[in-house]
Image (cartoon, rainbow, N blue to C red):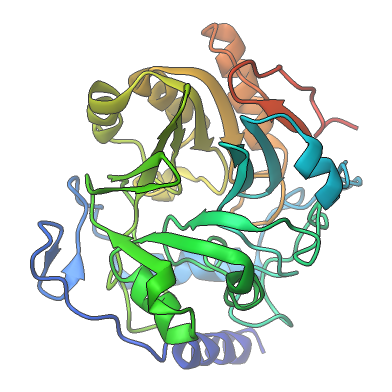
Length: 350
């Protein structure tokens, strides 16, 4: 039965991958038909990959999902419109709602119940989003880090694109959005170190150490990126997904220091730390970037690894305290000020 279920899942993934983005031969990251990291990922044998997927799908340890209700502060559009400028709200996982220059921005929005190509199987949300898609105010820009299902959600994009002025995405991801029906005039694709400006806010695509793919035949056909977001009086970093690498030091040298670094802390394992940082590496990356405050993201919403669901926040806050790194842990839906964040509370405790 387990084998049959696995075959069905892989068939669904193959069905989901119906679009091949164009080639990007002018990109230094693109060769042999695929994008590449500056620091290559270690090779993994086929059997090792099968073993990881089998454990992930059918043999997880206890504790990877919460045994309690995740606290969520419900948001309304009127509350957002009345909120101070230079604010941010965690909506869950890596989805952030930012108020910049009195307009709203989103990162990696996913409002679906599951992070998967279908809604009847796959990682299910621990909590509802703090706000519904219908209640969101108009969005100046949505920034996408890469095309994995927990960062690029088809159902969310199909509802959201009517109220989003611009989508900013890495090479190939923008082409995917256009193939879904998002007007091409709303989409900007950037390579690493390229930049654009929207409403006076500069957005730079910066390197990450990760991978891409939504099906069985599209591995690394689109680029992945982290992002620098700079405006009047603020400088922010959004990591997307990344393993630890020297690129953080280079980003910090070119664009730091940052008022807030929103850094991936979750879905990690020593078997794949080349593409997802361990908590110790997240704290190190914050230092490399010159981050004044660390906000851990990519946790608290989906079960995407074999660690306990609250392990990311426990470990990263303990390490940050030991190293005297300022860390903010807002509840889902809780506002923090980008120029004067507060520490938040241990919302993952009972």
